[in-house]
Image (cartoon, rainbow, N blue to C red):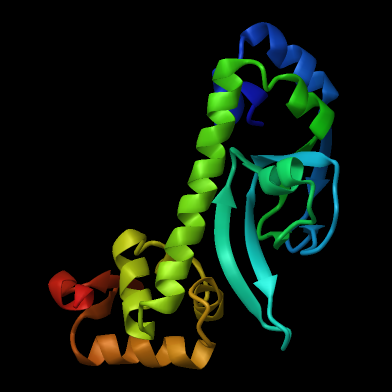
Length: 208
């Protein structure tokens, strides 16, 4: 399992503090599809992803999910709720089996005077802001075709690992819309199936 010093936020912290912090963390195992916390829940803990992968999403008034991000270990969650002392802005669900560590906010506050730790925390928060900025851009600017093309260019392997409805969920598209886009790309010879794997044939066309 990943150790605390492997987590970006804690990497720069003096090693003498790692054991103390490690002993203060409550380790909890989760199975696939387990909810870590719901949007609107309150908590006194920073969540540390030691193993597995989670998805973060908001729920619309109609009950549909709007996916914000997928995160792999090692990573941290709940910084916003920690420092703003507000409920979680999104739901966190494991999409694999995994392990989460819970660190009480009091421990986090205790080390804020350490410059390296504070800098690591700032970088973690900044990365979350960039993710939200990217999400806003994709949801407000990109068309359905552009969303699919963007994901293909960034991570084509995901199209060969996940089911169509899962990929559609990542892109906040309906499965029907996603299937139509893929069919359109195939007809235009932008992509094709080779040895049961989706491959990009015309990268320049997919970007347009």
